[in-house]
Image 1 (cartoon, rainbow, N blue to C red):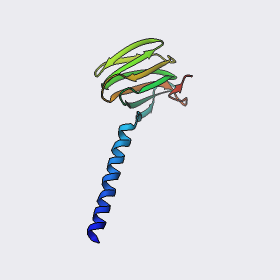
Image 2: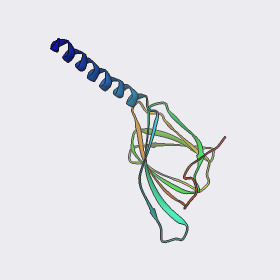
Image 3: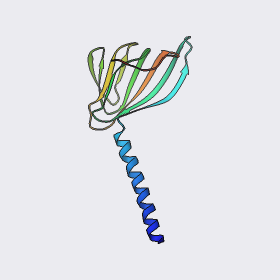
Image 4: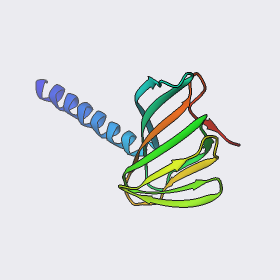
Length: 131
């Protein structure tokens, strides 16, 4: 009886770990806010976000109420900024002007990771999707 219970518990643990791993792999986009601070310029703040997307994932067209400075940490990204395509690899940087409509896609074979720094109007949504 104890052996059967141990086997069932072990099976549940392994199943839970496997399910978690699959869910992690299926997560298409993950945005993690790292820090947010008021700036010395009234009404402005700086926000840093780590953005991670799976291969083939497209982050749809959107805008920000201020400038975005991107540093590519990992992978190969293809951005479209104001209708112009830009490819960026690990170590590259990109500047997105305030209000510019832009999108991003992971065109590599592994996960793509960037550090996005926003200098934006305080109190407004950091990201607004464009239809």
